[in-house]
View (cartoon, rainbow, N blue to C red):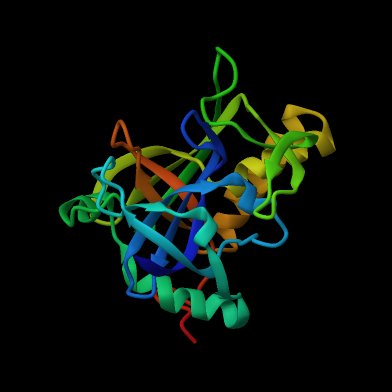
Length: 263
């Protein structure tokens, strides 16, 4: 079936033994339904002709993924993807807000009660942001590095091109927060591709872990909690079913408490 999907989140690239280098991509359809598209071939994010980005509207051929019990999961035909539009940030992200905020849940229990494994939440309080380092080396899901160009891909016309190599990273990040009508303190890993790309590129630019951490914390915690209304796109892990932050949504802070930026 063909679906029209607004891309809202992309997790860091990973290597699948079956599909090669892929990106798990989340979106919301023109019917207002959250959808998980997999596998999206990594080459689509490096190919100038077929490249698409967050908040692009795409058309894609996809079918329910029978090997995934999560209701929002669809198996996508990467070669069918066609970019048909983009939702920008004009008027304080008003168009994005109109599409997304009506589908915001107040907490994880509401998502689970609705049988959802994918959604958007607005924390009532964000009081921490930290990083962990795996003692045994890079985490299982590597991120893209621009330092080397080693991986070759084949274009639709049979020609080849090199794309940046996917390398491991030895750190990951978590937000600490609470939700409305829920006293639970959540400490949840964030797998947003943008966050990890910042981590990698800033390490190359600034050279030290301490400087990178200061920059990461300044943008993704200080700025996003002080100057922005930070929301989390969340989804469950396909094996463990635990919740993960798969993307960040950060429109400009509302002009007054309780006011939504829907102008």
